[in-house]
Image 1 (cartoon, one colour):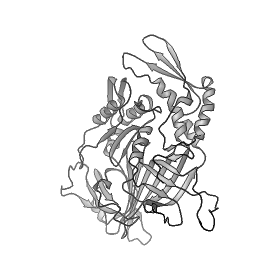
Image 2 (cartoon, one colour):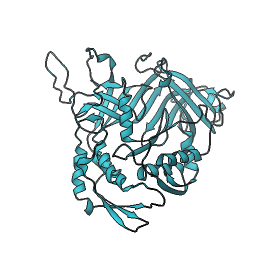
Image 3 (cartoon, helix red, strand yellow):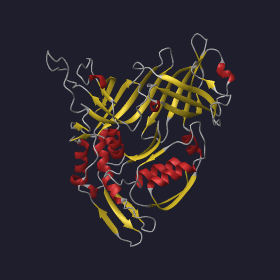
Image 4 (tube, one colour):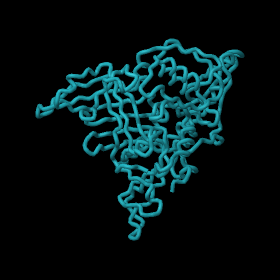
Amino acid sequence: MISMRDGQFKLNEFLLIDDTAKTIDCGKAEDLTPLCVQANIYESILEPCVRAEFEFYDAKGLFDLLTLDKKKIIIDFTTNEDNPKSSIRYELYIFAVGLRITTSDDKASVFKVQCTTYEARESAGDTITLSRRNEEAENAVKACLQLITTETTVTGTKPFFAEKTRGLHGFDFPLRHPFEIIDEIRLEYAMSREFNGHTFYFFENKYGFVFKSMEMLIREGIKNIGDKCFTQSTLTNLNVTGAKWRNILTTKLILNGNEGIARQIGAGAGFVREFNTVTGKTEDFEVDSTKLEFETLNKGSASSTLKAQNEKAKDGKKGKITPIIFDPKMGNARRAEKFNHMPYYIAHFLTVVIQITIYGDSTITIGDVINCTFPEASGLTKGEKKPVNEDSAMTTGNYMVTKCRHMLTFNEKAEYAQSLELVKDGIGGTPQPDAN
């Protein structure tokens, strides 16, 4: 139960402290609430870490007395005081300070501060060597995180949530940035034990670091969807289930370009050939797309991009050949299957991309599944007795939250909104479970 009005939040902590401080009770913490105009915190399943931008308004010259070098910002806020787990808390390290701009009345200065998490800062500067034999992909990722320069934050070590992967691999990465290594592991090595898509993501959200396949995120997200139900309507929903639906403020449907994006990240015509380093033999891998079953957000939905992928696959042998090295001495994972299936899953998943703005909800983070109901864009209603539009079969359903921008404004009302980028894996179908 949300204890505040829509669009409001409670700020638990908003402090500037030394980046080496292990506790906020260090005598050096400065309250930023009176100085901050707004904050934008960005999460994405395509980025390994969270980043943020804070805008400050200083009319008293207080920042002239502060040194922003080697400082970090702690922000902790919630939209539900009754649920401690709903809080969003980040420790963000300053890496850039914008130019100060004097206001038109010469009474204050305004400037922006760019921040990111500790691991992102260290990974950009440090190089590590990772050498493993007969290792699971998730353990290799965990090892990379442990090799990043150790830091004990105010909240302690960040949790790491990983899906159990299939097969053992050999890894040999000399002097590479940690997040570069992790990205290569997720793209080229990680294979799911339970699912066919083998499309893995590594990202940071409010809970910690996540290394899971999209299909596992869908399964867990549907299980935990709860009351994350949103609707776009100008009329009040008066039926008995109407209380659980929350309003979508703005919507932008990405109509074109989904197939192009899919091709850029792995979909499209292609052919996989495996080379065994011990026997010296090659083996061609083909896939029967009719036998591929993916975990889906909406049962029975149709994927137009997946149909296009099937057409491209018919000419696969004439297109790009992807050679896959298989060394039995280093591991037993047959990675050719991953490269075989991934293009189909990527094309399948990017059927509908939509961007929405909602009142802020601190329980929502990237990797979550939410349910959205959108009206048809025809402008025609059901009639005089039911002056509402029919639900859109194309856009209504369950969605995965792939990007989230937390937009906080620090004024008397403490306003909070979220801009979400959502992805749906088909048109039509029944949400799993049926949110209606």
